[in-house]
Image 1 (cartoon, rainbow, N blue to C red):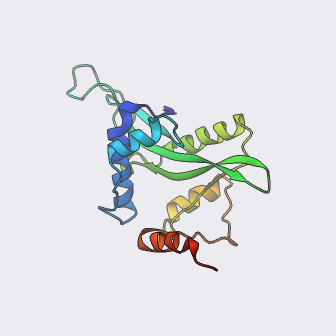
Image 2: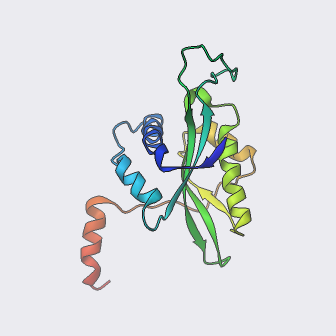
Length: 180
């Protein structure tokens, strides 16, 4: 089941983000804490949103339900997430969705969960009359690229992503008074 995230999902969303960092060969790179996520997603004026894929804990990886006397925990677990924010197209004059991250646990891939997460965002975009959903993918992530192309997404060959962070960001901010 795909649904908007709830505050009680924060610890597991954080765990999924750490798994994503491992998958992207950046173990230990996650500095965001569960508190940071809770503030961003559920604070006074959230600018970031999240949908999660949820499965009952009593359902095994093969999809079969186990009896009530099995030693499996009850409740649900999260199999994946899509974290996004609202963007804006100056050319189209309407909002869109920027998908910051989408991730499905390795043992749950190939079951349509990623497609379901993207479909949920497509519904949000459609219901709100947004123009598009955009995201980035690492060039080496061939399984994701194949999936995105399969659903009809198009690579934006003419565009490169730039990022200003850390000391470079601070130095540039301080140079704001300097003439260009």
